[in-house]
Length: 128
Image 1 (tube, helix red, strand yellow):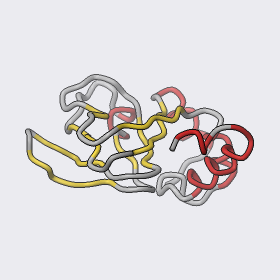
Image 2 (cartoon, one colour; image 1 turned 180 degrees about the vertical axis):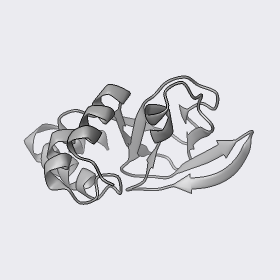
Image 3 (cartoon, helix red, strand yellow; image 1 turned 90 degrees about the horizontal axis):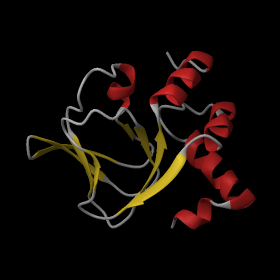
Image 4 (tube, helix red, strand yellow; image 1 turned 30 degrees about the vertical axis):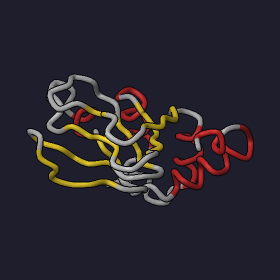
C-alpha cells in the first residue's frame, strides 16, 4: 500500500492526499512542501500509533484506514482519512498524550510530522 506513494508518481499522490487533509485546508503549496518532509507509515489492526501518557510529540495525518481514539481503555472516538491525531502534543509539548490511538482496520497509512517541522510550517502557513 505504501509503495504507491513512492517515486515521482507517488509524490503526486502524496500531494493530492495531503491537499485533502483538513489541517492543510486545500493549500496545495503547503501540501507540496509537506510531501517532501513527512514520513509514511503503515500499521495493522490493533497496533498502537500513540500511547496515552506518552511524551512524544509527533502529529499523524490519516491517509487511509481508520484509527480508534482510546482513553483509559474505552473507545471515545474514531478518525478516518483526512483527519489528524496528536496535534496537541506538538502545540503543548510538556503535556503527556491524553489518549491512545490504535488502528481499527487492516491498513492505516499515516504521515508523521514531528514538532519542529509542524511549528515551522505553522509559522509560514497559518490556518487560522
